[in-house]
Image (cartoon, rainbow, N blue to C red; front, side, top):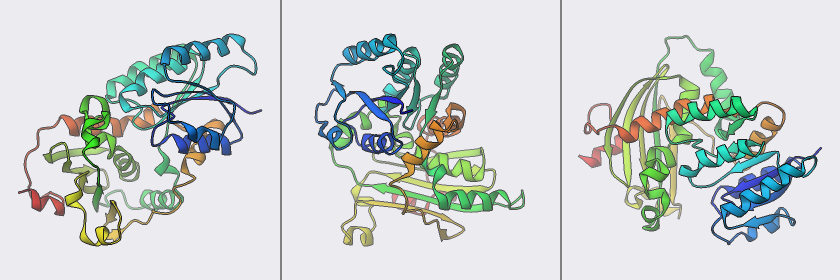
Length: 317
């Protein structure tokens, strides 16, 4: 029987992936909220969605559906709102008797997870998080290979992510650390989660440089030494990438060899939804390590570029 979904932040960048996943898993979207009313995208997926620009009215509507019960109540709240609202919107989902499917990061601070887990216990509902790289077929195969290696194997890993952003970025909530969690959370957490999932927990972490446009550092994981570099500065973009007219450069190398996972991204959210609907999915505990690491990185005092630094950090001296 189809499930009823509601969605927060439906005008945002990531929302179409959730709309597609809800549609492709054969379910219904019954309500949506966003302070921005540029939401014509809804018509590409669902034509009977109650839309709200004020959370109070959205809350009242979903609560009304809960009281009707039966086929009317909302079963899942998909959370695509700005990062700092994820905690509150997850709480809202539990309060109205729904499970939550929350975009990364589920919360900004690791201690927020503890409070939400207590509410899960009280409500009997669950908060799932979207860790879509963990279901990418080539990455699943890579993890199986790494898991079967000798326990003392150590890999040398380089993470480079440069995604050009204009002046609007720092003016928006994304550029406000207290709302986005800064670069380590807003653009880095996908990759930190992936690397910790592949190579194990953090044993040592350094931050070499940090400003609103870029940050870099070094992490020792159970099976890897990771040099990482995150940037929204267009001047960091490699010439060969610029020449192709591209605005994003993403690279993860292991022992000098590139991990190829550029394909197969379009359906990953749908796979995550399928897993959740099948009674599986990633929960708050799965999300905890990367949230804790991103929190520690943004609160660390940069120590300056040293021998552990990413190769791109040389230009920061």
